[in-house]
Amino acid sequence: MLITNVRNGPGGPLVDVEVQGGRISAIVPAGTSTGERFDADGGTILPGMRDAHVHIGQWAAARRRIQLDGARSAADAVALVAAAATPGTGFVTGTGFRDALWPDLPHKDLLAAALPDRPVALSSQDLHTLWLSPAALAAIGFDHPTGVLVEDECYRATVALPSADTATTDRWAHDALAAAAARGVTAVDDFEFADTVVDWTRRATQAPLPTRVRCVIARHLLDTAISRGHRTGQLLDDPLLSVGPLKLFVDGSLNTRTAWCCAPYPGSDSRGHLALPLPELTELIARGAAHGITPAVHAIGDAAATVALDAFAAVGTRADLSGARVEHAQLLGPGDVARFAELGVVASVQPAHQPDDRDVADRWWAGRTQHAFPYADLHAAGVPLAFGSDAPVAPLDPWDGIASAVTRTDDDRPAWHPEQALPLVAAVAASCDGRTALAVGDVADLTVVAGDLTASTDLRATEVLRTAVAGRVTHEV
Image (cartoon, rainbow, N blue to C red; front, side):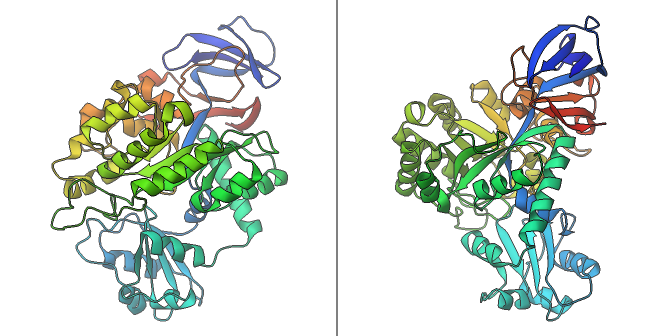
């Protein structure tokens, strides 16, 4: 592969990049290479882009469900579902509702009135709430007064819902990765609540994977991973597959008002939901670390982040937990930003959540939003940032995340807390495993985009010209 007339990193020099044997073999001044070429026409080449937090199975399925992100009330959501439901007796599924600012409350009776005797299952955008009709509750053997299940009840009910057969879900997963490659992604960390090692090992035998996949270990599979001898970073049978970190939940989410916070939610005595107290979290982290398994700890509220950092400190992060991660880190106490840096903990964040949740944060985290989605503070403190989408919570599109981190808005409104915006180069690095330019000898995971990124006025519209994994083209216009 020979890619010519391309900038090496944002605003970088124009070069020609040669690839041989799956690695970057030469980087020379533009116009000095000969042979069959891909002319980037002054575009930009980057180290391959990584989405560090995806739920591939749920993202693949959500793309085929009724979309409810535009619903402004429970009644509005029901109307959207009723209008889009196909005739029949089977399950009606929808996804993407956000009820934190609704003027009314979701309830199973609203679904029953619109679609009598029809099983209806609606997932919230943050995946922490499941809204079921009476028929859906009966179908999975659940009894619930409102049909609105959150946190542990939500997860148990979600697993109990009927799903497509394995052949179908595998096809959807391949399609989802192909769509990711079309946006420049060369690697994903799959946080699906399943045996990702088994699922992706099977899928890799069906067709070449369009991206690398890090198979994250769900908490309930920790013993299984240990018995298999798996360690974070270990390569599996297919060279594009590796073992990921251990996912642990400390709290819930902002939209569900279950993020564990230092102060109560306005108008309530509730501080959210503490899913893993410090002693239990510390024991799980230590157990995983003893077997070479790195933790990735979900912590959205400021109190949850403190619990996660306390657990890392108790275990000994730098000595035993290289690469330890806090997922989301949406609200942080001022002192905890420095603790991230001191402990060497990675902040695995999803910048597209900030413009999505700005209004919800203004209401439910009133008076504290200067510490919400604090990317500039983390960057200034030297904390490693890893960007992801949390798809289907946000689209699996790194350019949406980069644009959100740089502009702090996704509409015509002014930037929300612009003091927390990141420079473009820092945002790109967080999407490319900490790097922004290629070097000779690198594995040829690469993304080529049109134009000079430093001159872009619409990062979300960035055109991806070519994506390659180990020198194999996985997307090309």
